Image: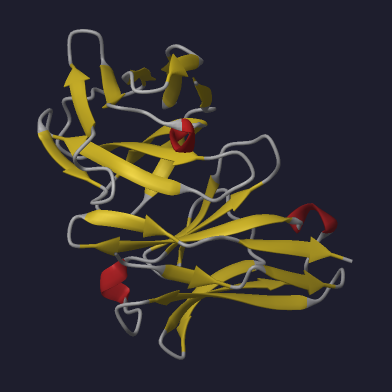
Length: 109
Length: 118
């Protein structure tokens, strides 16, 4: 069973920068995994932020960016705003299906 | 404007079958461009990809659920459906339907809570 691992929680000050990562139990994450990132706030459905490693949707704020970092997919939030406090999930593609990471709770404090 | 809406019983007895339907507006479920997807989230826990259907009948399922799950489309009603057999308390979750492509999941429904009772 493939496992996708994220940091359980991260804390960042308003205006600061934080990087979330997404690792695969099968080895290094590459663009072939089409890494996606989602934001979820309490009581809401997930909202797509990043697809295919680096691509933003039309509604994705400029302060969010995706990349590959040290064999992992990464989501960087720069100039963090209070409204960025949320759970963030990565999603990786495997052999026709998808696997979500366990999620990272980002606290803005 | 693409919209998806889940519907179905909010309470299912253990050992029975969970059935949910997703009604789609803004695009045909028969389109081969999209992957019609189900995702679930147990209370207080993370997201789990269940599976998808595309081009009306090609399906792919999470290996951990494959023996119990089926996803199908009803093109006459522009809907797609999820059935999950032999449910237990561990299947209690918010179930989301979503529209995806080869590279992403973009549009999501609001989610439907299904509770499995003993």
